[in-house]
Structures are given as C-alpha cells and as structure tokens.
Length: 121
Image (cartoon, rainbow, N blue to C red; front, top):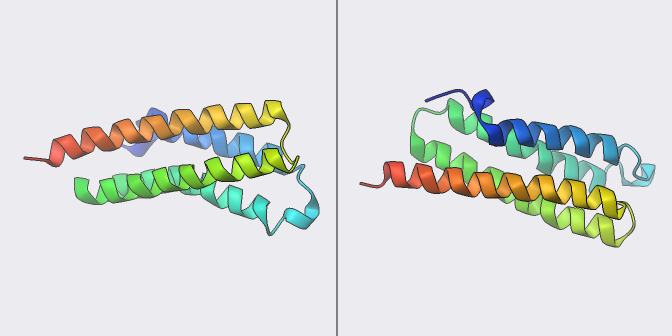
C-alpha cells in the first residue's frame, strides 16, 4: 500500500485545514472554544484519519478510518453553513471552503467505493 502522503485527497485536505485556520483566526475571540475549535478539529480529523487508516495493516481497517474522515467532512459541511448563516464567513470564504470540502468528500467516497470493491470477493 502506498503512503497517505501520495494521495490527492490527503493533500487537498491538508490545504483545506490551512485555509480554514487562516479564516478562523478572524472569528470572534469568544468562539475560540466554540465553533472555531469544533471546525478546526473536524477539519484536522480528515487528513489525520486518512493517515491513520493507511498505517493500518488491513483494508477493512483503512475503510473504517476513511468513513471517519467522511463523517468529519460532513460535520464540517454543517459547521460551514452555520458560520455563513450567522455571519462569521463571507460568501466568498464560504464558497471557497465549501468547494474544497465538497471535493474532498467526493474523493473520499470514491476511495471508499474502490477499497470496498477491492476487499469484496
């Protein structure tokens, strides 16, 4: 199995984490332990779980961690909508992050489907 660092989805999720951190630095300080922290944890969970899954010995374990990554991306999707609705994100920031997250979710879904086919007899 190749390294997680060679995966486009892992690299795109790292780029999204960086973009999210830069944007959330401007969120109200009162949200540091609220939505800011939650969004950052969800975003960081995506590449972290991809990496952990690729470090495991079996494809079934990898699938488990890819599903966790997908769940974190779904969580982030909801948090982005909330932040847009309450005015913490501009339309431009929302569109940028939403497009990145949507692309990552599609890539994760594709990777999951390919891994499921590979382990199904």
